[in-house]
Length: 124
Image (cartoon, rainbow, N blue to C red; front, top):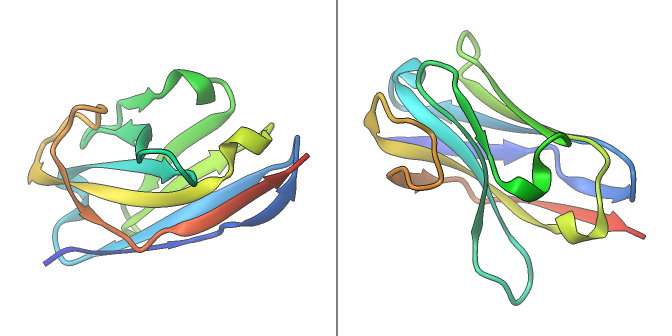
């Protein structure tokens, strides 16, 4: 079994920063791709960023240059550092894990495990 727990969300003014964390347990963390997704009210869940099992990152166009995905394999933890936040970044952010080992972490990857989400609200 895989368990994912997100933390770090909150309320921040436009232009501010937040760092989200996702603690993973249940399997060998280092062998699986991980990613961040978000869902705003009235919108579908969308891919934000992913990182492959060997550290290659992929980003959705709207967050390139502002968000950074990383992982600390010694702590089984995934991070999303968010800077220059905009009101349109407001959403529930979810951590996801690939179903199979050695994944690429791309938006088309086979993400099948999810955390409960953490709310990020950016005021104007």
